[in-house]
Length: 100
Image 1 (tube, one colour):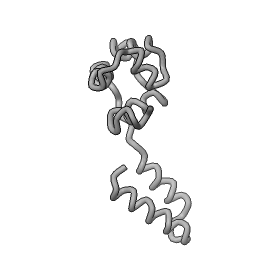
Image 2 (cartoon, rainbow, N blue to C red; image 1 turned 135 degrees about the vertical axis):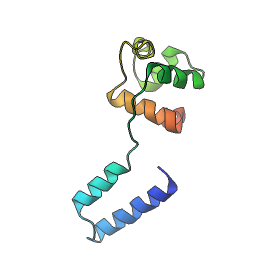
Image 3 (cartoon, one colour; image 1 turned 90 degrees about the vertical axis):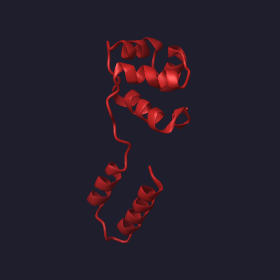
């Protein structure tokens, strides 16, 4: 999240506490601040792994999945989804330290 968005979110939380912004509006705003989820192609999964110079088993440990699943993602036999997809997005946008 950018510094600007973080500041706006803090301001919105303050306005919510003061009763100016409803709980529903605050929930909608918080949802907009979440990291957007994008699809990962087989090439993009492999590219991310190689960018960090990791083997499939080590990359899988970062994501808390099996190395066989990483292999399936890279070969296009399966697609990342759920929590693993979120971890891939975070690792791609913020680096492996964000998920380690």
